[in-house]
Amino acid sequence: MSNPEDELTFEEALRELEASVSKLEEGNLTLEESLNIYERGRALSDYCQQYLEQAELRIEHLTEDGEIVETEMD
Amino acid sequence: MDLFSSLQSEDTFSSVWTVSEANSYIRDLFETDFRLADMEIEGEISNFTRARSGHLYFTLKDEKSQMKCVMWRSQAERMVFDPREGDQVVARGKISVYEAGGQYQLYASRLQPAGRGDLALAFEQLKLRLQDEGLFDPSLKKPLPPFPKKIGIVTSLDAAGLRDILNVLARRYPIADVLIAPTLVQGATAPPKIVRALQWLDGRSDVDVIIMARGGGSIEDLWAFNDEDVAQAVAAAEHPIIAGIGHETDFTIVDFVADVRAPTPSAAAELVTQDIADIGAFVRGARQFLDRQILGLLTERQDRVESLARAIELLGPTYTINTTRQTLDFLEQRLESSMQLTLSHAKQAMALAGAKLEAVSPAATLARGYAIVRSENGELRSSAGQLNSGDQVEIQLHDGTASAEIKGVKQS
Image 1: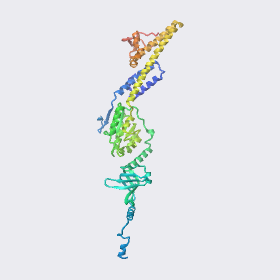
Image 2 (image 1 turned 90 degrees about the horizontal axis):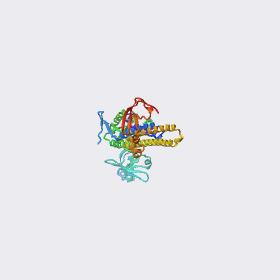
Image 3 (image 1 turned 180 degrees about the vertical axis):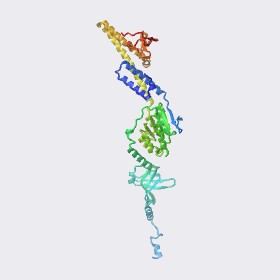
Image 4 (image 1 turned 90 degrees about the vertical axis):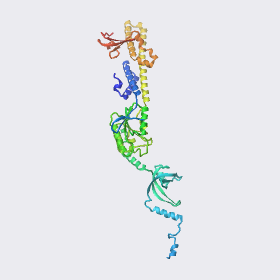
């Protein structure tokens, strides 16, 4: 299975994580299925957690010359 | 008539008048002047009194001069506007004389906030027209994206409102990028600039939502957001737009056209985001749930296998040796694969469950001589049926791993 960060947006990862929880909660799964969902859920939650932790608001604006530059806020 | 008698007459200019006669005469002069009959006068209200009778008494003044005013109850009651001391107003009515007091005054029939009268009217007219055109239709409102990646902001770079927005975003939702399209936000030249800034942001596919913001100010300061072109541009936008203009009590046309109206710029920033702390709590909660769930599942399976094994043992004598042997083999196999699977997740589960996990740890099992077979790409091979001659496999022992090639497969 591929890494969530390579193919999913944060929102998609969050939704899939939610779905993994629901599926595991519902039960009626073989051990193999449960473990697959579990593995996927771990990868997703790792990705989401990492995404949240490395967050830093990036602020840019359009200049009169039509360029996008970083905004300095004092 | 001789000169003498004419001098005696009361009708001549030299006669003495009473005060009442003089005041009455002056009043007639006022009343017959067409200009004084209907005037609009702008000034500031002072000495404002609402008499018990319901009549309003006040003075209108400017820098140099003042004028007494009265508004009768019948008119005062019909008025929506609630005049206060210090208000700049336009009063309409006739100017005449109060004979008893010997003073002229404005008899006001209408009172409006100065300057605002026309604007308020223009506002109402545009609002009605756009409403008729369907620009405020709730079915046109686009939902805000739950997790915007890039938030566009149409505002002035030195607006106080912008700082408020950025503070909220930095605290609540720093996972976003912000892209500001700077524009003038007040004055006659502002509307086309606002439209251009909005359209530039709206044309970008990396923007998820757009905030239109301006800090508080007078109705004139906010007027650019009552411009029809601006309103039409908001309505035509592809992206969801949230308006955070002025204070809570300020309503502009853009507020009605936007997909969401926030009472202030910082409230707009709150409405487009979720608190990162809540998202983090959700992710951690989901993870704990997954860990608990899988650990419970593995423990349960193992318990079941073990209790079945014990039951078979107890029932042993009533079964043929072969049946018992076969069942035990089967159970052993299941136990083994269950244990192997446990192993592959033990590392993470142990971090979670600590001592509880010790009981089901596969390390002890491996130490007893079991081994785990995996394919080249790490997939578990718990059954002979999953193996073929020539497969390269990885064998995990309690203290290391070994690579091997399958020479033959025999299913039991």
